[in-house]
Length: 633
Ligand SMILES: Nc1ncnc2c1ncn2[C@@H]1O[C@H](COP(=O)(O)OP(=O)(O)OP(=O)(O)O)[C@@H](O)[C@H]1O
Image 1 (spheres, protein in one colour):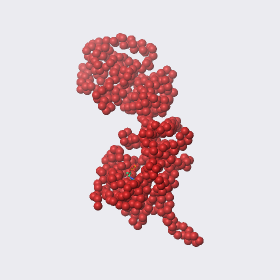
Image 2 (cartoon, helix red, strand yellow):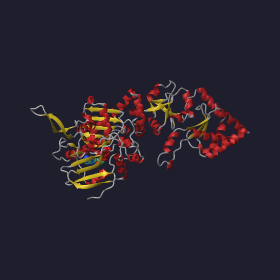
Image 3 (cartoon, protein in one colour):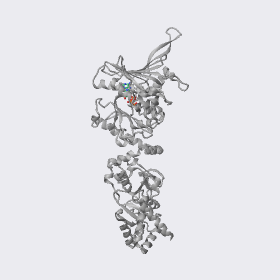
Image 4 (spheres, helix red, strand yellow):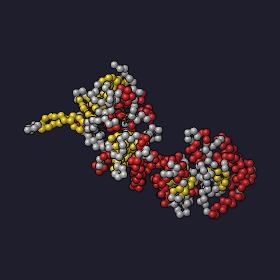
């Protein structure tokens, strides 16, 4: 007898969770086990086709379910690829499914089982929600020896030599005793099993068979008798091969949730049959929330690929472009060769055609949503909009034409998200540029001194709050020939000729004051000047052309940025219409040296407003303190 082996620690925790589960949808265990049986059958069928092994048909590769009321067991048996001793150990002793860090993290964080089961799907281990002992008999295709994996607690499992008269796997679940809250016996009822198969596994393309006892009228008599018939419980038509008209929303939702381990219904479903230069069925989904691991390296983009209903591969990444990486789904095409490898996919002509159509299909869906379901689109945008912006940035603007009309930004005027087309449509005749301002949050941007004058002119401003935003706009340069303009950068050119002249005059009159301030600040600034950018605020910082303040912050926060810090050129701008300017002038007249302290305080103030730290907070507060003291004298 072999020694008892221990589960890996995360697996043990997951198992404990399953064993003590209060999850209300325990019935999903059957779906999970059937799905594994179907995957194993796919692998076998694919191998047979690829290696030209005769004698395999899907009809013969049935998945059988048996229940035994006396022993209180449910058996699920497949004719799939099977597992050898090492595979039983490896696959069932560790969390194979969704072995992502988030998954482990969720367990570590003590998330409730509802969260974990719902969000990740728990695969094989879900058997332990209904069973207190599980036996997995398996014989790998091509091997002579079968093995059984047995576990009855989360303590560990054993693997022993055993026998099975065919390749594949037979799983025997020994149901838990019934409790006041849970009647496990329900799963021994043939009609309940039939219902569950129809509900969750109808599209599985292998026959799921069960012996059912039915009452039949005896021949030549009015009496009835119980007879046992083997019944195929599922229709076997993959959902994506069925006519759209006959599929209910619930069916799509259930399919999506079980296939892609999601907890929520998809936001959008795209189901299409395409015929012509290339023929395929596609079933695509836009999730209604961001997957837990979406921003981690575990997340792989791609669609499942089938050829005539035969599963070829998961996550075929060439089928969806990176900017639509959030789309999940599958493609089934008769034009693809079963032997196609990942490397070949890239250059396959049919694949390219399919990928091209799929991209167009997704663009169409998003465009429709934007037009006809604004709230829905806003929700989508919150979840995945960043991807589209990255698409433009990463392609150096090459995707601009494709994606620009799907972009949304927060509008200062509308106090809501708007498209660029909507912005441009509402631009007053004299407005030449599309204004934007960047910051951490909409609220913080709204407080920036630089936005006041632009808003006062009646111009709208787009508030950019995501790191990628400015980089995306920089790549785009303009929209419909209207250039993007950062309100904190360069000259705004929104003043009238008269105002311009006035400003020039003021600047000339106060040349030496401005120079003194500039000298006092040294290399902290590239310039000090009077501005018409400000209204009620005394000072602000603007950046010279090139890198903006937000870009500086983003670039310097990147990994390994320390070695090469980026710095936007700082220009201290002073509002000549503000009381403070008069104060500066009179201090300068009385004591030019004191202006240096004023300069340093003003510069630090401007830094704080921009969201930068002041270089020497102690000096800053000392200077304010002495100023307050001298003001009281
Ligand atoms: N009936 C089976 N035949 C052959 N191998 C199986 C069978 N059931 C499970 N396995 C193996 O055990 C592994 C773990 O199964 P589990 O259901 O926990 O996760 P998964 O199926 O890989 O992931 P997911 O549930 O996310 O699809 C599978 O990947 C597969 O290799």
